[in-house]
Amino acid sequence: MDLRLWAHAPGVEQLPLLEMLVAQGYEGVELPLAGQSASTLKVLAIALRDLGLAVTASTRLPAGANPVSPDARERQAATDYLHQRVDECALLGSRLLCGGFYQAHGVFSGEPPSDREWEWSRRCLREAGEYAGKLGITLAIEFQSRFDVHLINTAAAAARMCRDVGLDNIGVAYNTYHAHLEETNPARALPAAGDRLLHVRLAESQRGALGRGQVQFSETFATLDFLDYAGWLVVEALAPGVAPAHPENVWRSSFDSPLQLSADAIRLVKQVLRAQRQ
Image (cartoon, rainbow, N blue to C red):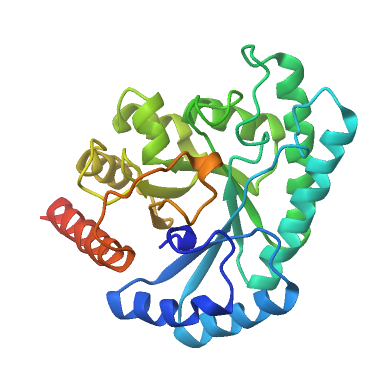
């Protein structure tokens, strides 16, 4: 379960929530890294281990730390920012960091992506990947919709970037929300990621309760089964007033309560998986 439903930068105040997610049947959580202190991350790591919860991490690049900026200082700031998040990932005990960190979120040039931007991003990811590899951490780059980024909008483009970076510890994160906006269907999009597919986020078309929108979850799971995908399935949902409103543009809720959403989501996932196996 992605903890961004409850907090932009989860801390010790989320410890009771972790116990409730275990009771609902979750086996792991995804924790956004947004500058939490080292002591906070260490406490969370201990709590997660004691609860038997696995953990993955996510992050995004803010304006001013942009790998595709013409300003060399902003490009260096992006590399430095990612190194810090990788360090935090290690403190948390996560071995995977995902997100659309090939460019700053919501920062657009007003033009289609250029070869120069692609190369700048590739260099940043190469440096971050080499640094992460020394700590045993894998990076999963999430292709995102044209409303969020302009450099990488499809699974095929994300896989191409991974090949261009040329590191074994960089792969693709597939998010059903972004794929719903940019891809034809899961059966074509998921195979495009190929053997680079590392991580899957399950998010609805309205970014709320799973099963109440237009995402093709049955088709997604069938394709993942066909591809023998064995990574995490992470439930992602967002709420107004929790995640920063501007980056996500989430202005209304499409669920009754966060805990009801998480309970319904894991029930839906298990139902679809059971149906696939029959």
